[in-house]
Image 1 (cartoon, rainbow, N blue to C red):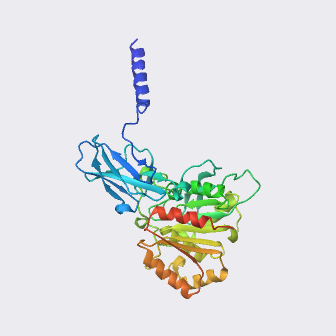
Image 2 (image 1 turned 135 degrees about the horizontal axis):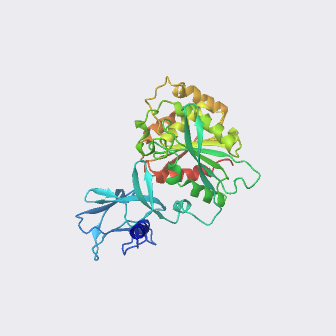
Image 3 (image 1 turned 90 degrees about the vertical axis):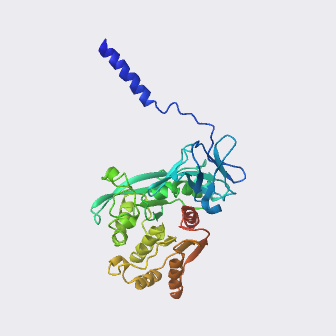
Length: 387
C-alpha cells in the first residue's frame, strides 16, 4: 500500500512538472504592436521600475525610445513610422537590459539575444513566410584536412531540389565576425528570401552554402565537441583570426559540396559573397582562386590594412587582382552604408580598382554596419546571379 501511494505521489508530481507551462496564458499587455500606419507600440509591465526605455536597430531617434506609464500603469512607447524591415529590440529597465517578456520571437546575434518584429510593405515582406514553394535548410558536416577536424555547414536547397532532373548553381554566403553557420539562416533569413525571390521569378533556383568562418571552431557555439564550454565570441578573439587558413582551405568546402549535392561544378555557376569579415574572406578567396567564381559580392567588407603579407593568402595582392581581372568574371559587387565605419577603407579599395580599370558594380545605402543592410544587399545580389 505504501509503495502504491508513493508511486501515485511521484506520478502526480511528474505530470505536474511535465505540464508546468500548460497554465501559460497571454496577458493583457500586447507588445510589440505593429500599427497599420507603420508605427510600432511597445508595452511593459514593470510596477517598481523608475525608468524604462526600448532600444532597437531602427534609425529614428537613434533606435531609442523613452517609455512612459499609461493610464493602466503599463510602460508604453510608440515609434515614428518605420520602413519595412525586420527589427530587433530590447528593454532597458533601470539599467537592466533584457528581451520583451511578452514576445516569444527572438534571435541571437553573437552572444546577445534580441526580440524581433516585422514591418510589412517592402523588403520586410521577403523575410516572412508566404504561401509559395519552400526549400529546405540542412546542416551537414565535412572533414577539413587543413583544420584536422569535422566542421559544420548550413545549406539551403531550393524548392523541388532532388525532385526534378537538374543540377543547380551555388552561392557561398559568408558571415561576419561573431557569426557562424547559423547567422545567415537566423538573422539573414536566407531561406525565406530565396523562397520568395525564386517564387516571384526574381532569382534563379540555387543552392546557398553557409560555412563557419571561424576556422579553429567546428561549428556554432553549443554545437562543437566543447559543448557549452564554448560561448559565442567575436572572431578576433579566436586563434585563426587573419591567418589566411580559412581562405586557402576553402576549396575543401567546394569539393565537398560538389560531391554531396546536385551542383553545376564550374566557374559560371558559382558565386561567393559575405558581410563584414565575410566580405574580407570573400575577397581573398576570390583572389587566390580566380578560376572558381564568376560572381563576387562584398557586403560592408571588413577590408584590413594590417595584414601579414608573408601569409600565402594575403601576399601579392595587386598581382592577384590583375590575375582575377584577366581571368574574367561576370559581377564584382560592392555594397556599403554611408554611415558604416568601414566606409573609408571601402572607398580606398574602390579607388585602387578604378586605377586598374577593374570593373565593379557599386551600391551605396543609408545607415551603417547592420543586418538591415546585409539582408537588402542579399536581395539585390541574389537577383543578379546566374542570369
